[in-house]
Image (cartoon, rainbow over all chains, first blue to last red; front, top):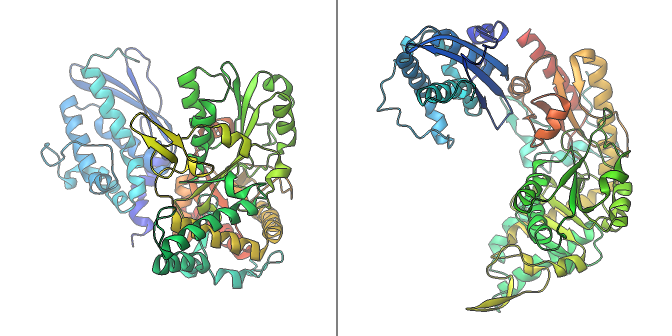
Amino acid sequence: MAGLEDLYREIILDHYRSPRNRGELEVPPAHRVEGFNPLCGDEVVVYLEVNDGVVTDLRVSGQGCSISQSSASMMSASVKGRPVGEARKLIRSFKAMMSIHEHTLGGDEAEDHEEAETVNPEDLGELAALQGVVKFPVRIKCATLSWNTLAQGLDEIAAGVQPGG
Amino acid sequence: MTSTVEAGSLDIATLRRQFPLLGQTSHGRRLVYLDSAASSQRPRAVLEAMDHYYETTHANVHRGVYAIAEEATRQFEAARHATGRFINAPHPSTEIVFTKNATEALNLVAHSYGRHLLPEGKAILLTELEHHANLVPWLMLAAERGTELRYIPVGDDYRLELSDLDRLIDGVGLVGVSCMSNVLGTINDLGPIVAAAHAEGAVVVADGSQIVPHRPVDVRALGVDFLAFTGHKMLGPTGIGVLWGREELLDRMPPFLGGGEMIRDVRLDGFVPNDLPWKFEAGTPPIAEAVGLHAAVGFLEAVGMERIAAHEVELTSRAIELLTARHGDDLRIFGPPADPKGRGGVLSLGFRDIHAHDLAQILDAEGICVRAGHHCAKPLMRRLGVTATARASFYLYNGEDDIAALSDALEVAAAFFG
C-alpha cells in the first residue's frame, strides 16, 4: 500500500505553496486555454505566448488540489522558454509517466505513447517527483490536467485559432 | 476524545456487527465509513436474501409456468409491495416502478411525462440545490423542446428562498425538487411548494434519494406526484431504483423504454403496452436486487425509521457541536445549523485552505471514507463559491466514535499541510 509520502513529496508541496508563473497574460497577444477536471471541478487556465516557435511566456491560473496546482506550477517552470517541439516532447514524456493507470481507468487519451519520442523519467528533473501519483489512480487526472490543457493550447496555436478564442 | 459508540437510542455496536464491511480495517485502522449519502453499506440480511434467491429460486419473472419461475415472480412482486408500503403508497402494486437507479426514475418522468403530457409553453421550475440527476434530464428536455427552466434560489441560510414563489410558479407545468440536499443536508419544506404547484395545475417530481433512507416518508402526506429514490443508499443493492407515481398519472404516461415485459401485444406495425407498473419495466428487471431491496426495507423497518431519524438528528447535532468547538474558524460547514426537522446527516466541510481532495486523501490514510468533490451539484457549488467540499454523511451505523476519528484526522491534515 502506497503511503502519503509517495504522493505528497516535499517538492510537490513546495510548488503548491509557492506556485511558479502564477497569473495571467494579456490576450492577445497571449493565447488563453481552459482545462477542467469533471470529476472534482478543478480548473486550470493556461496563458501562452509563442514567438518564432518558442514558448516565450506562460502563466497559470485557476484552482484545484495540491496535485493539480503543483503539477501546473512544475509544468510552467519546465516549459517556459523552450521551443514548442521540446514542450510537446515533454508533454508526451510526462503523460507516458502517468499513463500506466490512465489507460486502465478508461482515460480519454488514445494516443500511442510507445511510438512517440519521449524523455527518460530520470531526465524529467523535478517532474519525476510526480511519479508517485500513479499509485493513487484517481489523482492521475489531477496531475495531467495542466499538461492536457497546455497540449490543447499548443494545438490551437498551431491550427491558427485566434488568440483568446 | 470520547470513544463511546452510543448515540440516541440505537445500539451501534450491535448494529455494526451486522454489516460485514464495517468490520474491516483500512490502512491498518478501523474503517470509518462516512459516505452513506453516496452509497450505504448493506447488512448481512440483504446479502443473504440475495444469495438465497439465486441459490434456490432464480428464474425470469412473468414468463415461466414452472415452480421456481412462479416463486421468483412472487418474490419480485412482494418486493414491490413492501417498497410501496414503506412510503405509504396508496396503490403499491401499480404505483411502484423498479428502475436502475433514482437517475433513471427521474429520466423516466422527464421522457414520458415531460415530453408527452407537459403542455407546450408551460415552464419547469427546479431549485438551485438539485443533484445533476434532477437537473440534466430537464436541461435535455428544455434543449429539445425549448421549455423555459426556472430555479428557486438558495438563500444565505442554505435553505430554499421561497419569498418569490408566487411569481416563479406562474405558468409552470412541472416542479422538480429534492426532498433533501445531498450537499447541504437541508431538508426542504415541500408543503408550500406542493400547494403552489397544485394551485397552478403543475405536477411535483420529488427526488427522495437522500430522505427515504433516513426519515419516515409518507407520499400521501408529502403530497407530491412522483418520488424517485434508490436502493443502494438505503442498505439495498446497487442496480435498483424506484419511481413512485400517482396511478392516474402513470396510467396516462406512454412507456419509456421499449422491449419485452412492457408490452401486451406486438405486431409488425405496432404494439400495445402492458398494464402498470410493467409498462415501464422493459426487459428482464433487477429481480435479485428487488429481493435485496425487500430485505433492506425489512431491516430498516425492524430498526424503526423513527429511531434511525432520531439517531441521525442527535449525531448530526453532536458532530456540529464537537467539530465547531474543537476546530473553530478552521472549519466551515456548508449547511444550516442543527435542526431536527430541517437538517439531515450530511456535513459538507471546508477545512482551512486545504483542497477537498487533499483533505479526503489525508482522511483516507486515517481509515476515514468521505466524499470529496462537487457531489454532482455543480450549480450549487457555484452558488456556494467553491469548486469542491469534503462531505461526511451519517447513517444508522455511525456513532460518536466516527465523529471523534474525523475530528482527530482533521488535526492530522492541519499538521500535514501546515
